[in-house]
Length: 532
Image (cartoon, rainbow, N blue to C red; front, side, top):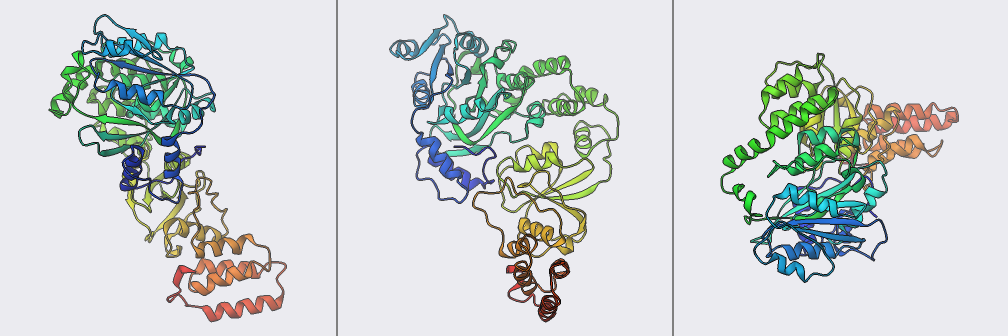
């Protein structure tokens, strides 16, 4: 069963190790958060499930050396699937091979008409309640359709579900990259798609009822169909994320053929980008002009226009919206070449201690009028597109060293934010534990840690603070004394102990005993330190 929230952010090396195991190159690493175990379940699959039928659509042209592997990966799914293959006029023996495959629905086009036309032909023939478009040179992992279908059909309002992708080199068979799908909350999905490609089609399961509502694929898009498809699709509803690798993208120089022959993107990147932009710019501009959107989407459109090297159109969009500007809006205006000043705001230190997607969920829940500084206790190779929507400082650190008034937020507890405090009050603990200990000692509402890492444990010092404020009297006194003994000079700890001694049930004897022990522990930071 795939957890709804996801898993702890992992560094690049850990992700690549899991990705290599997904391809069968070695064993899965041992982990504490269950990520590798869940990936193993996807790869090894399980008993065949019964659920709404899914169409796996494969469009192919002159890829007989690669197509059988893609088809085999679709056959290996443990969910009811129909496999529809559109042969777009192949001349290399593809038609003959397909003629011998009795379990496939084959559509043969007499001439090569291009990818958009092939997609339309396949969509018209599909009978599944959802559809996944798999390129003829890529692979699905066993179990991928199951986890995507579970997520999609469990969320009736969702138009699609997408997952992560690993990239492997066809020549060397090495895993070279791990692409994390967009993790932003559903409220930001549409804006995210306006700025970036959120996932790959082979890692995306689309509800067929939503697909039927879309206009046909744009025939002029030799490349960029994915971008345009996501633009149109996310205008209909939200998308859910499966935080697992579900597809293997094959990196190679073998082209699909015909019209695609001009896209030698590994040969001359500058020339590739010039041709790509010449292809997608007219369609993107038309989608923008036809869209009825509000302020938030307007700034996302503008950023997308900038990314597609259309600054004049971006400025035209941005001039529609008047100040004051948030930090994000000011950043977008700066990218488009317009002057902008964001209002001065309070600083919130966001500790990225939660699972995949937790940071984005936390940032989305922050109130307006705050400046964001994100601290990643564990370095990781990506923060998704968080920096696009929440500009600020992003740094890797395990201990917070601040000397100013700030607020705290934990990505494991979206919606929780501390009152303003002096950062010098933090105990010298790992970042998330320091925040939790201070919240307990100061008597603030405790973070819920609803997206905390599975199996994670509080630092003993932070746990003692928690026990002191959650246990009834007199059981609260022992953990309070442990706090004082470990870090006697920590002012919030002493204040916490004073509050506990002042409790209505505390007797004078108990108060005197605790006060004497606290006085004797004054200044005893020492080797025991904040370790508790």
